[in-house]
Structure formats: structure tokens, C-alpha cells
Amino acid sequence: MSWKANVRRVEPYIPGEQPGQKGIIKLNTNENPYPPPTAVTEAICRIRPEEYRLYPDPDAGALRQALAAYHGLGKGQVFVGVGSDDVLALAFLTFFQSGKPVFFPDITYSFYDVWANLYGICYETKPLREDFTIDPADYNGGSGGILFPNPNAPTGLLMELGEVEKIIRANPDVVVIVDEAYIDFGGEKESALSLLDGYDNLLVVRTFSKSRSLAGLRIGYALGSEALIGCLQDVKFSFNSYTMNLPSLRAGVASIQEDVYFRETLEKVIDTREWTKKELKKLGFECTDSRSNFLFARHKQIPAAELFEGLKKAGIYVRYFNRPRIDEYLRISIGTQEEMQALISCLQSRISGQN
Ligand SMILES: *Cc1c(COP(=O)(O)O)cnc(C)c1O
Image: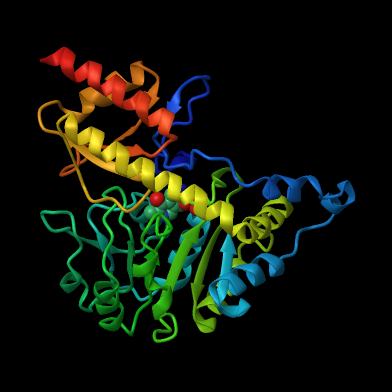
């Protein structure tokens, strides 16, 4: 007899490495290479010691209000959580209860199937087309819920708003979640936010981790109809009332107020992305048309696994997924211009060394 037969066993999500050594170039988890604005760290410093005695605001009112104002919505349309991972995990628990399979792409954020398995929610993956685009016709009803990132990860491909709307319109009986973790890097025009007025089954999920340089504070949010957000709030309050800690709540508000710095940082990342893409092409890589803060690149001759190991030895960490259809690709987060120059030089010497 053993307790082992009586516990929940799951296969966990494997996050990208967070190596401790100094001097490495970290391009493996899509963090922002630029620091958050000083207003963010100042907001945390201003917290008085006695404020830490108290539980944080369970309603996260100030942050929800700031996000609501920023997006031109009501506070009741905003849900916040400990990174969008927390928001998405609660959304799975809240919205995917029909018993029918949840649909998401076969190549996508690799946490989706982990949550489905954890909660015992059945799912069906829909193969991306040969060019890695999502076919909206695959999502024409029959599901217990739908979810996809836009832009998708790890391909970086952005779906047009018209296609996104087709999927939402075809599925009024279930919740459709659009995970917009990377939308700020040039995809705003295709954001599903403009559809919120017309569809009360739409949930748009966003994060402060990438575009707002705050992965370390864990802030994510969802926007949707008051009815949807109300359901999420009820589940959250049945799970943990105080998900968001005080520094994250304060920092989140400060981040939202620093729009000029935010836009400057995004511009820099986008410029560096386009520069890196050009340089990679010269070295014999093919890249998808990424509208995110990473590139998805395949070399025409050299296997990705080999490049991945070689870069790692040189202290440059990128991401490699040893999975069908994408095992020839590297996912390379966009760092500073200097970091990307170092990446290109390193690849240059490896590639010319091979010929
Ligand atoms: C990074 C990422 C997330 C999670 O971000 P958090 O740090 O938990 O906010 C969610 N979805 C996608 C597609 C991501 O790439």
C-alpha cells in the first residue's frame, strides 16, 4: 500500500531557464531588455513599512480602475491576477465547464494543455496551416471553449481582427479567450479589445511581463463583459482572495501612468527586432513575420538543436522546442541592440566556421 495511488500526478509546464551566472545574454523567456520606468520602483519604495502589516486590497480596486480608464472600460470589466498565467488558469477553471473539448492550436503556448490536464478538462488541438497560420474554419462550433494567443507563440504570427471576429461570432455559446501577451509589439490594430462591445463571450488576456518590463512582479489581467468578469471574480474569491500583493498593485498603477516611456521602449524593441531579422536572413535563416518581442527562426542548413547548444556554450540563451513541426526552429527573444549584435556575431562565426 502506498499513498502514491491517491495523489494527483501531472506533467508540469517547463519554464525557460533562469540561469544565475553573470554576463550571459538571456534571450530565452521573452522578457523585456529594458527596465521599467523609475516611477514603478519609486511607487514600491513609497510604501510605508506599516502598510505591509495589512492584507492588500482583495478587490485590487486601484489597479483595476487604472486599467479600466486606460482601456476606456468600466472597472467591472477588468480582472487582475498574478501574471496572465494566473488569470488564464482561473479562466480555465471558470469557463471550460461544458464537458465538451476546448479547442486551441497544436502549436501554441505550451501551458494550455498543462492546465487542461490539471483540471481534467478535455481538449482538441487544431493543426496550424503549413505556414503556421490559424484557420478560423477549424473553430466553427462544437467546442466547450476556445483559446489562442494573438500574436501566437512561438510563431509570432498575428491574426487579422476580421479572422479573430469570425471565430468569436461562430461561437456564441462558449467563451472565447484571446491571449494578447504580445499585442503591444505592433499588433494593437488587430486587438480583440474593439470587439468587447459586441460580444459578451469574449475574454481578452494581457500581461505586464513582456511589454511593461515587469515579469518579476507577476501582473496580468483580463478584459471582458461584466458578466464574464463577475464569474472570474467569484472563482478567484473561492480560491485565494489576496492573489495580488501590495507592491504589485502599486507598481501596476504606476506602470499604466507612464505611457510615454512605455511607447519608447516598445519602439526600441520593434526596431531591434526588424534589424535582427535582416541580419539573420543574411546568415541564411528564415524567420516568420513575427509581431512580438521574439523571432522564430530556422537555418536552412544547420540544425536548430546544434545552434542552440553552440549559443549556450557561448553564454547566449535562446529557446528550442524539441517538438514535431517546430524542432528546426529557434525562438529568440529580442534583447537590447548590443545583445542582438553579440548574438549575430556569435552566429556569424559559428556559421562561417561550418563552411
Ligand atoms: C508569457 C506568456 C504568458 C504568461 O505571462 P505571465 O508572465 O504569466 O503574465 C501567457 N501567454 C503567453 C502566450 C505568453 O507568451
